Image (cartoon, rainbow, N blue to C red; front, side, top):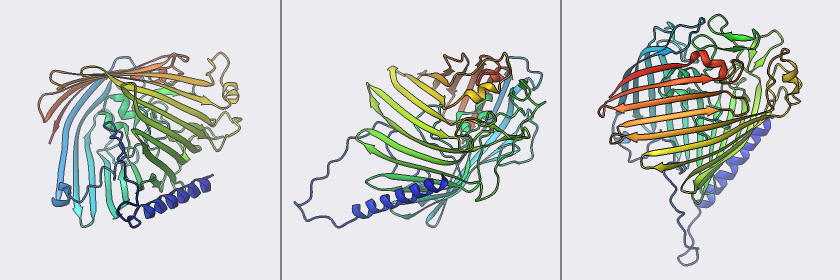
Length: 463
């Protein structure tokens, strides 16, 4: 199956380069060619970039300046609103300093972003760049090159994101940090870094993004060390008393990942097709010995995003090919499934934006998984339906931002509500508070985290 992905990548790049060559052919004499019609401008945020955000054009100030430095210092504190005997009462309590730097080095641009953390809640200061734990979290360390007018290269640690969903990811198979997301860190920390090579080819026909990760980058998932979860082997909620230590693929160039995105604009709409070959990003499988594992996975999908009825609509689909259990007969491994997303967002009133989404996961064969559950437990539905709602309100001359996001499964009855209120004291200082509340049965997807429900407060100084 991976050979098919590689063949598709080679074919797509060949077609893109051929299209670029045609685009650079000599122009016809005046009067013989059809007049070029400029397409209508896209709504803000929907255009395909001419190059990655990190690769500045020749006239960018970063090309004229030896360095561009920025960062922040912040303190965050939070408490659980439920008793959890397996965890500390404090959900977060840390001081974090981030330093960002961008340097020009001849034809290359070097980007470096590092966080320095004092965290007495987790009390783990040994640096682990894979998990993000410890006194240092390296967010970015990469080099950007533009060897050809239509080719950008980015190599090293970087933050990657694809897809059309709002906090719902189908074709975005890059690592996420759910621990940070659930305890009240800034939303930027939901995206964990990838150690990868990204090549971007830009043509008039189609734009191609190819990402190669030489060693598997897993999600920073809930393992019990800081957040409690439902352990199916124990049949109960567990935390520090049953920390998950999975068997992870970790051989360079053997346990690798390949992700491909082909996109183009059609009028005011952005269309994209995706392919991925690698592993499930979380330890969703069990070995015969009872160890959590990351089974093989391929994903194929597409997305469409553009204006509709005064707002912005999005559609995304993906097929998850669980290569180790295509028949759905092994209850220890995740079954193949289809995933769907339909979203819509618009400004409902001045300074009030409303966004709604419908998301579904439909497993192809669930009988084996149901049969493996103990008697008396609730049998999961073949399709999990999820509705999301986002409300964003700007007030006090847009210095106060109020944000509410809720996930809710109407057929399984669980959900997750997260609220944020951020007030800019001035250009440098920001104070923020919020909550994370989980509800449902303890064996449900969101309900298993209910003991982690928390409130938090943060203060940030940017520079």
